[in-house]
Length: 336
Image (cartoon, rainbow, N blue to C red; front, side, top):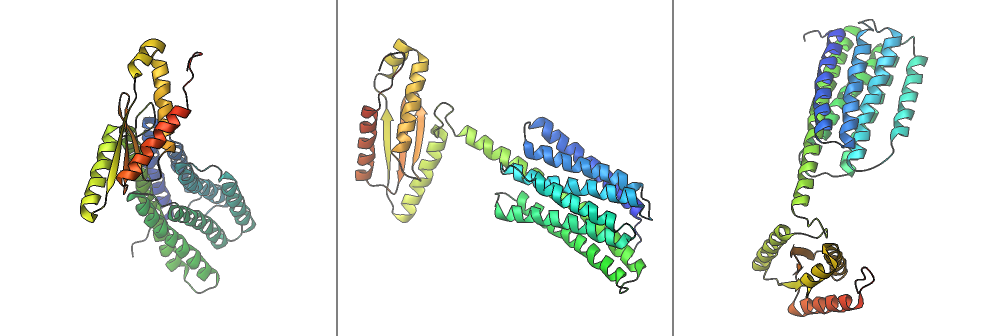
């Protein structure tokens, strides 16, 4: 087995972290504001700084750079978890980061005379954060391959940290020769470094997929009313038609247009017309059940797709719409 020098590995950490920092900086600049990306960029920058600090400890593992560098890297790893929370629009989490980091720092200081003991502490801290990332990804299932790539990379990296913990414990117990330990630990660190590159790739795919889904929603949403637009309605209608043909099921469509909409615009202005459309959209939402599709086809024309609905059900929905409109006048500028 080729021997890996820890100082060389810290230089590798520096170069990879620098590369990922540049990548996330590009994401942050292009897709701002994107809070998750900002935390992932912070994570790689902190790993970069931590790698620089660790380089000063040498192969002997000087106490101050060893503790400080690993604390910085642990805070950086924690920002990956914080970024995952922000990706799901969840707040908080920095308190857990502070607690984990403080406990790890105090334990490493308390074990200042034991290189192996300190190694167990910071490996356990990093493995804890990786486990938190895996649990988060499992709890909040995300579409696309990116989340699975990130989970797999975290699992491999956590396995590397567990090997570090076990091998250090074996050295302390006199069950493992230090030379063998040195080889295991160096390869475990290398495994973590390259796994970090892979989970960053997974995060990048997650970010791109989320942006793509947002673009799809925008392209299929009517800007004024928030309803589905003609494109989205046609896609839903095609799917409902296919299901009906395959399973001999029924579906119904309600078509709606507003009477005297042009005179309303001419007399009170387009702002009044927009208000009428928004009010109608809100009323239509109240008349349907989950799974029905309400769409604005254009201008004052609307439509409702009712999957698995008979003509009688569609007639009831249409009657409900007429009754709600009659009972909900639009008041603008002192006129109704």
